[in-house]
Length: 153
Length: 193
Image 1 (spheres, rainbow over the protein chains, first blue to last red):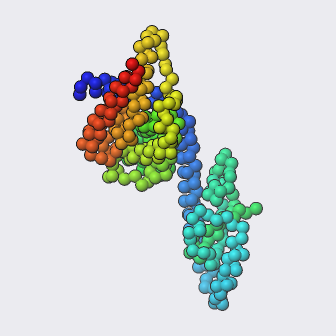
Image 2 (cartoon, rainbow over the protein chains, first blue to last red):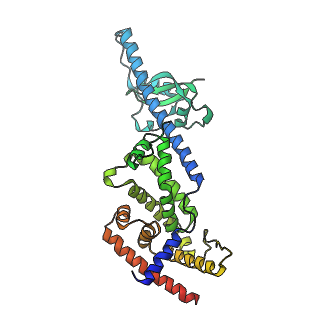
Image 3 (cartoon, each protein chain N blue to C red):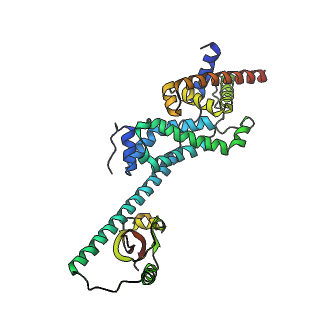
């Protein structure tokens, strides 16, 4: 390294120690807030999936307990769709529900869910009450996957 | 909430972050924010870009920590890779403004002059300012090696890992970048005289 290059490296070292050397505190605050929001959403999503599975298990258990039902006339596709339309009214779609097959036969289960889960469907919520529980109905498709949520008055 | 162990490696922290562990995220952020911020600042010459990039980099970490694979490189090089992409994107967006840097007042170019050696301090500050402008005028491929090796004091191997290229490439780019800087500084001196 010649003298010019040494001077240059020295100058670069001075430049390195000049000016702000770390991000301002507000960035950490913003990031932590965003981290919390995403963690809550992740928990809510996991909770909704678990609630769907639990509800299906409960319905199956009830059906098994009642015993075999009397044979019924198979519903025509038109009947199924009409029933689904009527049943699905007032439900707010869950994220990714559009990617699922259309609802042909629906099942509605009533559950209690944390207020934080409502953020999933775009409801503004009071963060202080995020852990409170609300009563809601979950719409399950023929495949048992949750399609939407409707709040119970 | 559980505390993340102070001796946790970056891999451990990223695994915990992907599970929603807030203290792990805070620890990871505090450990790396300085390097990310300084890289963005020296590459762009603007504090607002450096702040925006720092925020975007760690937002990305929150979103994709699960996809991090330590077999493909260290967490530091993973972070530099993300930072570099954001910086280059910002520079492309800001190109007209960056080109005009020579005429513009830089936002951290305020001269901090102490009373004891006014002329000496002024000269020193002017030299630093000229050097900053010279660094910012380098093509990005040369600028990033100067920022990593000379300003952030990384060794060649670390810089090669961060930029995903061979050590020889770093060495030759740094050599060329320093030559360009010396040329620019000599030209600036001639203009000053």
